[in-house]
Image 1 (cartoon, rainbow, N blue to C red):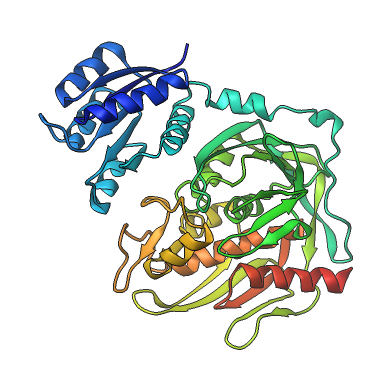
Image 2 (image 1 turned 90 degrees about the vertical axis):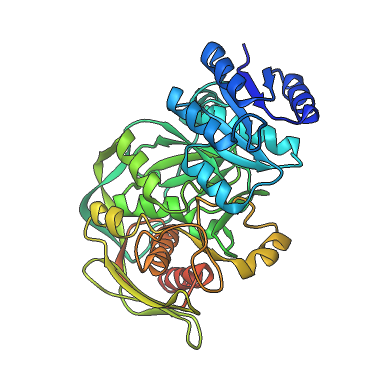
Length: 429
């Protein structure tokens, strides 16, 4: 049986049209124009999800949201409004709303949001179980080959690693704006890290040869299929030393909160498993360099992996510097993983023209205006430069192996990270 959805709105046209759209998709619906009646219907019928208008005739939509969450802390509520503002949207999300949609409603967006909401709740056809089923394939008959052997590789005392069991991660694609889900599952020793597109099943190795685009994020591609925004997940994998993993994904890696922290937490939740074979590390043998002018990125020999980054933007960011040594997964999780991606208000029109940034919601990035950060409190005073360090750690895992070397960066981005890796592989081929 399809899930039951409650629609709460004081516009009769919205109630009728939205109910019809959902029922055409096989959902069951309840409708009401009043907040008090919505609370009573929820108490008696316990719908799987609620579409809730901000403006209601008898009580404020945010008050109704709070009452719903008090009645059921797991209530899945999607706010809708034609008169909302950014602060209202932020407040609704912080109060526990799953998402915030503006009127006039785009019904394709409504269905995507509802599917994602039910998936996060673990019910309905968009649930994690279904994605796991969709992700099933003839993996036993596939061969997942590691990146090619290189002169810079050294066998270490650290074991290869994978995850203990499969899991599903749902979220929003930062640049596509679409609800996206991915399955991670273990692979045997000497497999490497691989992506598998859903539903087509195109295999894309997490390797430099797969890089197709570096504008605002790192995109991998093969046989006409692409996977966007891989760097945050790869940073978490690099930091915890997972060398063998299969990632089945719809188009774009979920952005989650814009950092790598939730990926770290999910990896720990499912368990990181040592495997019965030592891992190879890519040990830097000399200085390699990329960039021109003020932009400069280098890597040179060192006993461990570290990144030193200097960043400079106009106020309110200014100049920031951070020096991080990958002493442990714990150090990464505390110092670097929580740092979120950021963007500038002045760039939004250009991003829209490029078809990027559509998923840049108010709770999954840092939005910077002319004089201040608009939408959030910073997790660190220097969160911006820490995120740049995170991106380098993720991008460098496209070398195919954990890296041992000291990186020094000044005003660089994804394109420079990839250029540096090509210099390393070109010299060692």
